[in-house]
Image (tube, rainbow, N blue to C red; front, side):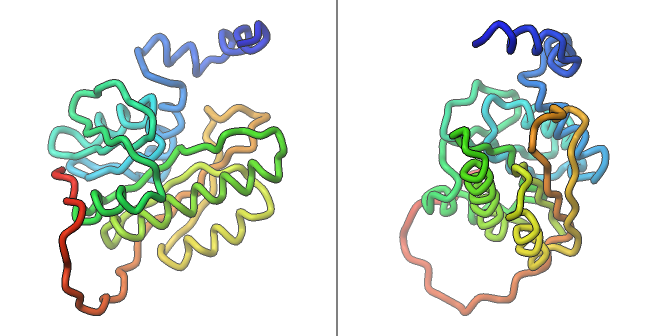
Length: 215
């Protein structure tokens, strides 16, 4: 960790506020902004947090859905336990994860997933869009009609097509950049609300397989 990075972080008001308030990361202020602006969470809601480590978004979601709500945090990395949050080791896009979550419908799916940075912006942008598509694919399976989806993406020429893909499933799609996002960063957030009801699937006979997550 370079000295310049450390100095910039110390001057960062969101980093200092996160330290002061005992938050797990400054990213907590981003999801708080998304909720304040778009009303994603409500008391009693069921929230799926993708790319959750170290848990900053899950802490905010848990506080806002209250005791009657449910928050499930998913990440391939371990997450330190959070009171009232179910943590799941898994990678978005893995069919095994879909099978575990498919029978536990959610009201909100949020994703702060980010690709491993290569330094080539076109590559990083495309990878970021791919992660949002993975998250959207999971949301299509687990999200209730009327539900909401929010995901981080690196801005670029693929975003308009990604917005059109979201619009196929949601009544409203918006883009925003929270104040806590650093000015030089290309990250923006797509927020999609009003999940449309999926067309009924042909009846099938379910066979044995991974059990749904008991949440």
